[in-house]
Image (cartoon, rainbow, N blue to C red; front, side, top):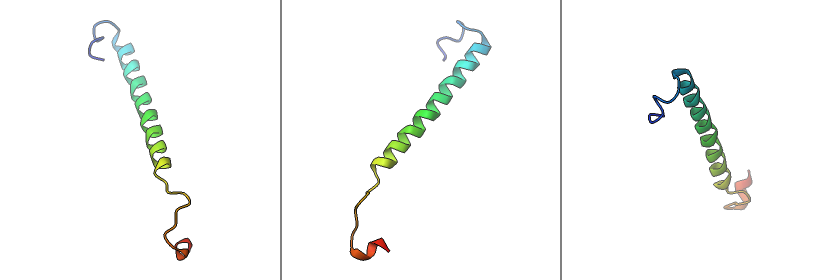
Length: 52
């Protein structure tokens, strides 16, 4: 964002910053969702009474 400071208008700079921020939030959500899905021990039980 800093390298293009003089190349575009302030409005376009703000819009591109917002687009990058939204993309970062979406990416962070999917990374956390995938990590939580991969870390779920589905089908694992320690003992018979663990299901209660």
